[in-house]
Image 1: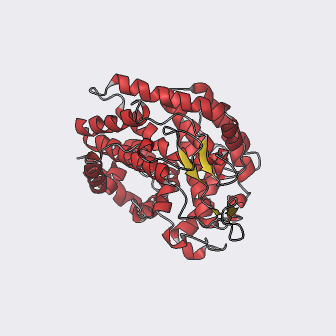
Image 2: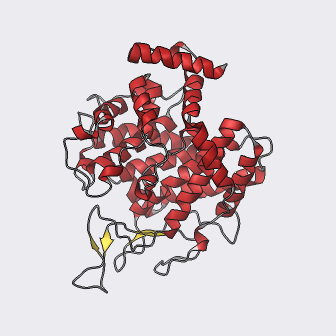
Image 3: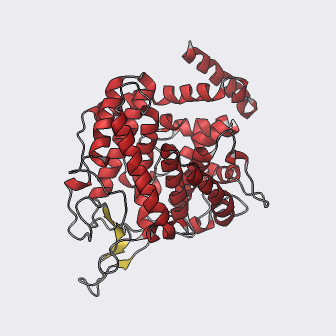
Length: 394
């Protein structure tokens, strides 16, 4: 019966375009059911894969150049390369060009972990079956609680540069992939057979990580960065604070969005000038808008409606979506330079389309999201798509 209702609503939407109001029915439930119908087969297929996967944490791969220990996450700056004039000396930067020889095993393990939890939590949302929760908790325990395999709740050695630094604040962007882990636990934590000790242990890990993110010099540095890095910091802190019920940090993130991210990163036309200046302006613009929309989505509730917030000059998340949407619907209209790498791999089913379509009742945006690729296989695209399992976010 529910599917029939959804199909009727789709007919009305297609017939009347953007004049049709999702609010004429139980909007959120109907919208989520339609998203489930779009993704159901793929979700169950991904979950079947996830059920066969054993935990692989960062302790599986030792980073020889890391200044940390086996439980410390380590990665290397993407755009740093050996100096042809001094091969054994400090690396030099080639912005936008990823060095394939850099250490990425920990990042890959974390992305895999995120994919597993996202898939299992999504399948649980769709079916309600216990097997998905039970297997997810096995991975959660390995990453956050098992003394032999867990990751330390800090990021002191991320995006290091050979010969220059052992870690950097901008490395914090690597843990955007823990967001769907946190959100997956939010979805599964109230399941009757969920192990309360694991729920408690994982939440403690995220509380400890939040303490590091908000007090360590690297965390402060990332928070104060001027482009997508500061957006990603707020996005992560908001996500992890919602899991741990840290109302003070949630309010801090709302203030940060209203007072810093939106007014200082967005131009009056809705673009992000600092992203457009990069060597991958299209991909960076997509990423920052996805992240800022996720911030609005996470932080909005009955008492805080950031979806309708505008600065005194008229900047808003709606304006950001309206600016970028035409170039997602037709990338050929993009008036700026093409990205130096991965130009042909974007766009995919960008989260800002899905969240914006629901909140602004814009079926055109939803239909574009529906037709784009939902489960990309290009590693760099996956890495820059922190929300890949939208069912658990709706």
